[in-house]
Image (cartoon, rainbow, N blue to C red; front, top):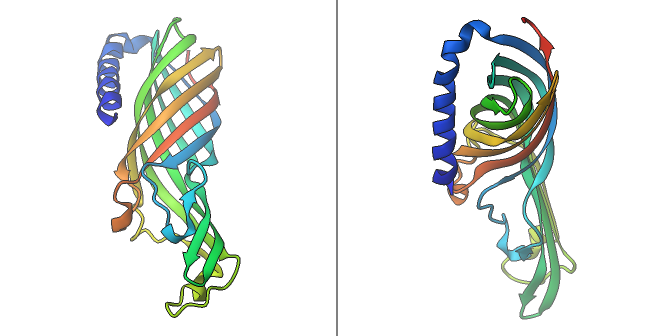
Amino acid sequence: MKRNILLPSAILFGVGLVAPLGAYAQATFSLGPRIGVQRTHQSDVSPAFEIFGELTGDPHRFGAQAGLAGNVQFSHWAIQPAVLYSQKGYTYEQRGMYYYPSGSYHVSAKRELTINYLEVPVNLVVSTGEQDGFQLIAGLYGALALNGRNKERATIDEEPADPFGFGSYAKNYRRDEKLTFGSYTRYDLGLNSGLGYKRNALQLQALYGVGLRRTSNRQQSDGTFNRSIQVAISYFLPLSR
């Protein structure tokens, strides 16, 4: 799956950087705000506490993107860098039954992971029109984690009386802490691809982002990478004609 995304993105990005050079003299420049929303998750998320049952749905969360985007236009081709504040992470819930010789108990848990990034994507855009029209997009992004938070809570509906001490934390387990970037990776790098439409100064794009760096340094999270589905609107103000 990763190779299927990586190869066409890399080819399109490389060809697109070379193709516009002959038209550099006709390049136009514009800059403007970009805002968007994204549905994010991390690949291969495992529950923090298997005792609290199965996941009730796909771990994900909705976050915002906001910042500035540039547009360097070479007729049908454009290079679009941006600087964005980007919220990523996931939320999941677990529900199930905890069985013990003295009885069975309803159990539930919820975890919310938030990581806020300063993200810099650089996308290559090919348009059906000379400057406007439908767009094919591929590019790269780099990101620096600014801060983050991990919240966990779990409950059992009745205190188990057992010699192993499960009840001492499970009855009312709560955790709310800032992320430390020894356990979590501060830098991310990835690929973007998607479709868009531009008319005059207004641009709408739908992108899929694939992170290539693990988000956690913890052994039990070795397989987790950022994934995001983004919808963004940009409004470009001309800097040159």
